[in-house]
Amino acid sequence: MEVIVITSSSEKEKEIPQIIRLFEHGLITLHLRKPKWSKKEVSAFIHEIPEEYHNKIVVHGHYDLAIKYKLKGIHLHRRHRNSKLKNRWNRFVMRLKHPSMIVTSTFNSIESLRENTLKLDYVFLNSVFTSHSYCNKDEEAGVNLLKSILNKAKIPVYALGGVTKDRIEVVRAAGFKGVGLSSAVWKHIDKNPQEVLLLIQAA
Image (tube, rainbow, N blue to C red):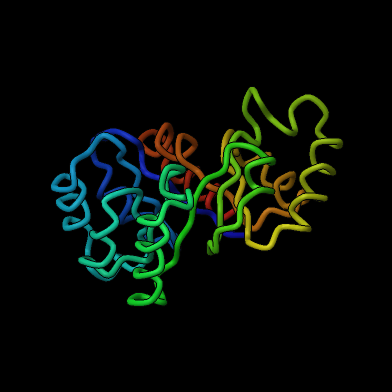
Protein backbone atom coordinates (compact mmCIF):
# COMPACT_ATOMS: atom_id res chain seq x y z
CA MET A 1 0.00 0.00 0.00
CA GLU A 2 1.52 3.30 -1.11
CA VAL A 3 1.95 6.35 1.12
CA ILE A 4 1.69 9.73 -0.58
CA VAL A 5 2.91 12.80 1.32
CA ILE A 6 1.20 16.15 0.78
CA THR A 7 3.15 19.30 1.60
CA SER A 8 2.10 21.74 4.27
CA SER A 9 -0.30 24.24 2.71
CA SER A 10 1.78 27.18 3.96
CA GLU A 11 5.47 27.98 4.22
CA LYS A 12 7.31 25.71 6.62
CA GLU A 13 10.87 25.98 7.92
CA LYS A 14 13.25 23.28 6.63
CA GLU A 15 10.51 21.78 4.46
CA ILE A 16 12.68 21.20 1.39
CA PRO A 17 15.50 19.36 3.25
CA GLN A 18 12.81 17.25 4.92
CA ILE A 19 11.20 16.47 1.57
CA ILE A 20 14.57 15.44 0.15
CA ARG A 21 15.10 13.16 3.14
CA LEU A 22 11.70 11.55 2.57
CA PHE A 23 12.61 10.90 -1.07
CA GLU A 24 15.94 9.41 0.02
CA HIS A 25 14.04 7.02 2.31
CA GLY A 26 11.78 5.73 -0.42
CA LEU A 27 8.92 8.21 -0.82
CA ILE A 28 7.42 7.55 -4.26
CA THR A 29 5.04 10.50 -4.63
CA LEU A 30 4.86 14.00 -3.16
CA HIS A 31 1.86 16.25 -3.75
CA LEU A 32 2.95 19.88 -3.82
CA ARG A 33 0.00 21.86 -2.44
CA LYS A 34 0.52 25.56 -1.74
CA PRO A 35 -2.91 27.07 -2.50
CA LYS A 36 -2.00 30.68 -1.68
CA TRP A 37 1.34 30.71 -3.48
CA SER A 38 2.00 32.39 -6.81
CA LYS A 39 3.37 30.49 -9.77
CA LYS A 40 6.73 32.16 -9.16
CA GLU A 41 6.84 30.92 -5.56
CA VAL A 42 5.86 27.36 -6.47
CA SER A 43 8.41 27.37 -9.30
CA ALA A 44 11.18 28.50 -6.93
CA PHE A 45 10.18 25.75 -4.49
CA ILE A 46 10.42 23.06 -7.17
CA HIS A 47 13.71 24.48 -8.40
CA GLU A 48 15.27 23.88 -4.96
CA ILE A 49 14.42 20.18 -5.08
CA PRO A 50 17.05 18.11 -6.94
CA GLU A 51 16.01 17.35 -10.50
CA GLU A 52 16.30 13.60 -9.90
CA TYR A 53 13.15 13.83 -7.72
CA HIS A 54 11.02 15.99 -10.04
CA ASN A 55 9.38 12.93 -11.55
CA LYS A 56 7.97 12.11 -8.10
CA ILE A 57 6.11 15.43 -7.68
CA VAL A 58 2.43 16.06 -8.43
CA VAL A 59 1.55 19.75 -8.46
CA HIS A 60 -1.74 21.30 -7.25
CA GLY A 61 -2.44 24.29 -9.50
CA HIS A 62 -0.08 26.18 -11.83
CA TYR A 63 -0.30 23.09 -14.03
CA ASP A 64 2.10 24.34 -16.70
CA LEU A 65 4.91 23.91 -14.14
CA ALA A 66 4.39 20.16 -14.46
CA ILE A 67 5.46 20.46 -18.10
CA LYS A 68 8.29 22.91 -17.41
CA TYR A 69 9.90 20.71 -14.75
CA LYS A 70 8.82 17.32 -16.16
CA LEU A 71 6.90 16.49 -13.01
CA LYS A 72 4.97 13.29 -12.30
CA GLY A 73 1.60 14.92 -12.82
CA ILE A 74 -1.12 17.37 -11.85
CA HIS A 75 -3.86 17.34 -9.22
CA LEU A 76 -7.14 18.85 -10.41
CA HIS A 77 -9.09 21.22 -8.19
CA ARG A 78 -12.84 20.64 -8.11
CA ARG A 79 -13.45 23.66 -10.36
CA HIS A 80 -11.19 22.12 -13.02
CA ARG A 81 -13.11 18.83 -13.02
CA ASN A 82 -16.27 20.27 -14.52
CA SER A 83 -17.26 19.73 -18.13
CA LYS A 84 -16.69 23.25 -19.42
CA LEU A 85 -15.19 23.18 -22.91
CA LYS A 86 -12.02 24.97 -21.78
CA ASN A 87 -11.39 22.40 -19.04
CA ARG A 88 -12.10 19.45 -21.33
CA TRP A 89 -9.79 20.88 -24.00
CA ASN A 90 -6.94 21.56 -21.53
CA ARG A 91 -7.16 18.02 -20.15
CA PHE A 92 -7.23 16.56 -23.66
CA VAL A 93 -4.18 18.55 -24.80
CA MET A 94 -2.17 17.63 -21.71
CA ARG A 95 -3.00 13.94 -22.08
CA LEU A 96 -2.15 14.07 -25.78
CA LYS A 97 1.17 15.88 -25.43
CA HIS A 98 2.24 14.24 -22.17
CA PRO A 99 0.70 10.75 -22.03
CA SER A 100 2.94 9.64 -19.15
CA MET A 101 1.84 12.50 -16.90
CA ILE A 102 -0.71 11.42 -14.30
CA VAL A 103 -3.89 13.32 -13.41
CA THR A 104 -5.42 13.04 -9.92
CA SER A 105 -8.06 14.76 -7.80
CA THR A 106 -9.75 14.76 -4.37
CA PHE A 107 -13.37 13.93 -3.57
CA ASN A 108 -14.94 15.02 -0.29
CA SER A 109 -17.78 12.50 -0.24
CA ILE A 110 -18.62 9.00 -1.40
CA GLU A 111 -21.43 10.48 -3.48
CA SER A 112 -19.12 12.76 -5.49
CA LEU A 113 -16.71 9.85 -5.98
CA ARG A 114 -19.54 7.70 -7.32
CA GLU A 115 -20.63 10.43 -9.73
CA ASN A 116 -17.16 11.01 -11.18
CA THR A 117 -16.84 10.33 -14.91
CA LEU A 118 -13.38 11.78 -15.50
CA LYS A 119 -10.45 9.61 -16.47
CA LEU A 120 -8.12 9.93 -13.48
CA ASP A 121 -5.08 7.89 -12.47
CA TYR A 122 -6.03 7.87 -8.79
CA VAL A 123 -8.07 9.95 -6.35
CA PHE A 124 -8.15 10.83 -2.67
CA LEU A 125 -11.30 10.30 -0.61
CA ASN A 126 -11.24 12.96 2.10
CA SER A 127 -12.49 12.88 5.71
CA VAL A 128 -12.05 9.12 6.21
CA PHE A 129 -11.11 9.50 9.90
CA THR A 130 -12.18 13.05 10.73
CA SER A 131 -15.29 14.44 12.45
CA HIS A 132 -17.33 13.54 9.36
CA SER A 133 -15.73 10.12 9.29
CA TYR A 134 -17.00 6.92 7.70
CA CYS A 135 -15.23 4.87 10.38
CA ASN A 136 -15.19 6.64 13.75
CA LYS A 137 -18.75 6.02 14.92
CA ASP A 138 -18.89 2.35 13.99
CA GLU A 139 -15.60 1.19 12.60
CA GLU A 140 -16.78 -2.22 11.37
CA ALA A 141 -19.80 -0.75 9.60
CA GLY A 142 -17.67 2.03 8.15
CA VAL A 143 -15.07 -0.39 6.82
CA ASN A 144 -17.78 -2.56 5.24
CA LEU A 145 -19.39 0.47 3.61
CA LEU A 146 -16.08 1.66 2.19
CA LYS A 147 -15.14 -1.83 1.05
CA SER A 148 -18.38 -2.22 -0.91
CA ILE A 149 -17.79 1.11 -2.65
CA LEU A 150 -14.07 0.76 -3.27
CA ASN A 151 -14.57 -2.70 -4.78
CA LYS A 152 -16.71 -1.05 -7.46
CA ALA A 153 -14.42 1.91 -8.04
CA LYS A 154 -12.84 2.01 -11.48
CA ILE A 155 -9.79 3.94 -10.30
CA PRO A 156 -7.45 3.56 -7.28
CA VAL A 157 -8.68 5.43 -4.20
CA TYR A 158 -6.39 6.72 -1.41
CA ALA A 159 -7.58 7.51 2.13
CA LEU A 160 -7.13 11.09 3.29
CA GLY A 161 -7.95 12.73 6.61
CA GLY A 162 -6.93 11.60 10.08
CA VAL A 163 -4.80 8.66 8.95
CA THR A 164 -2.34 7.56 11.66
CA LYS A 165 -0.04 4.58 12.10
CA ASP A 166 -2.62 2.59 14.12
CA ARG A 167 -5.24 3.12 11.40
CA ILE A 168 -3.14 1.73 8.55
CA GLU A 169 -4.64 -1.75 8.95
CA VAL A 170 -8.18 -0.34 8.93
CA VAL A 171 -7.37 1.50 5.70
CA ARG A 172 -5.94 -1.68 4.23
CA ALA A 173 -8.99 -3.72 5.29
CA ALA A 174 -11.33 -1.22 3.62
CA GLY A 175 -9.57 -1.74 0.30
CA PHE A 176 -7.84 1.58 -0.22
CA LYS A 177 -4.90 1.61 -2.62
CA GLY A 178 -2.94 3.72 -0.15
CA VAL A 179 -3.02 6.79 2.08
CA GLY A 180 -2.33 10.49 1.80
CA LEU A 181 -0.50 12.07 4.74
CA SER A 182 -0.01 15.73 5.53
CA SER A 183 -0.41 16.87 9.15
CA ALA A 184 0.70 13.43 10.39
CA VAL A 185 4.04 14.16 8.73
CA TRP A 186 4.58 17.89 9.20
CA LYS A 187 3.47 18.08 12.84
CA HIS A 188 6.01 15.47 13.91
CA ILE A 189 8.91 15.42 11.46
CA ASP A 190 10.94 18.03 13.39
CA LYS A 191 10.66 16.34 16.79
CA ASN A 192 10.59 12.72 15.68
CA PRO A 193 11.70 12.20 12.06
CA GLN A 194 12.30 8.50 12.62
CA GLU A 195 8.67 7.99 13.67
CA VAL A 196 7.52 9.69 10.46
CA LEU A 197 9.75 7.44 8.37
CA LEU A 198 8.36 4.39 10.18
CA LEU A 199 4.82 5.63 9.51
CA ILE A 200 5.55 5.87 5.79
CA GLN A 201 7.18 2.46 5.74
CA ALA A 202 4.41 0.86 7.82
CA ALA A 203 2.07 0.74 4.86
